[in-house]
Length: 446
Image (tube, rainbow, N blue to C red; front, side):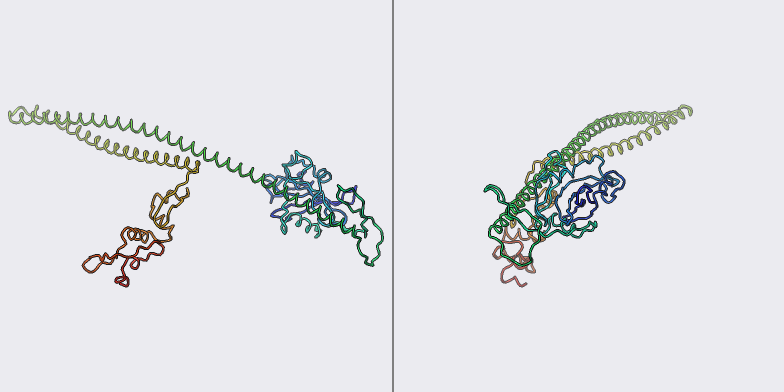
């Protein structure tokens, strides 16, 4: 848009990866702020935006690099209140983008301190700077600004003091096309101006790089704090799980103890019933021998049947209790394994937080530093881990170790006798060849 009070154009550029991905008039951006329109493709994102003041010759005069957040529906933050117009008018000088030194407001150069965190620093890397991308977008003029050709001007040297940077005042007046030599004083002033601008640009770049370094450091510290908190939360969870498993373990131990007591009591009762059964059988035999009356004999037989049924039930209960006891023992062993695994994971987590370094020595490899991610793989197979570091198989590495301990010819004849002649020990497991390095000259070809 063109400011009605002046001939300035105002545009807003959305930046991403050192490129202008979207551009609009400031009036369109104001509609965005008022919530009349949204940007669904920017949902739940913080956009890097540039407010640009452009003169009638389509040259950048002022830039403000600010941040704005869009919610889950792609609508601009209703509390956004950065005074970009004010910042553009009172900001310090920046680089020259073709129309003279611009006014620049960014995080490392903000004239209103409490808005500093709401701004961002441009990338000034040659070849991929944000300034070059903005200048290119302004030159393409996709927003359709009217361009007014500038009048031909003549530089007039203004006298200055020794402690000031000389300036050139541009005065509009007709100029003859005939070439004439430039005065030495003017060349010197122009050179000093270019040098001063270059120094200022480099200072600005150093300032932005320092600001980026501080931001990266703060982000790194934040990520470290989050990871540390996550580790502490996980450790607390593991410790709570261990305590819970210990309580369950104690409860199962107590339950198993009671089951054992019940089982012993049941065995005593079965023994008593068995004794009673024996007594009844003896009485029955005696009754048969004495030829007692049939009624008493039938009574004894009925009582014998009842006792046998009771014993059968006791046997069934005994078998069931044994099965239940075995099941409880299995659950107890499983819980013990869970407790040991939880304690091991908790210990490994503490060692990782303490940044403990694991170092192991293996022949042919030397001292090997084992990263935390490989510690379980190393514990499962130290020989296999060392073999992988030597780029050989586990079998070759094991044979090489035997060769190192006893460098003799391993050839066996048909009778199974070993040659046993001394051979030169191969120092590198990667160069060890089974059937060649471990055999003498006589048997190396066999």
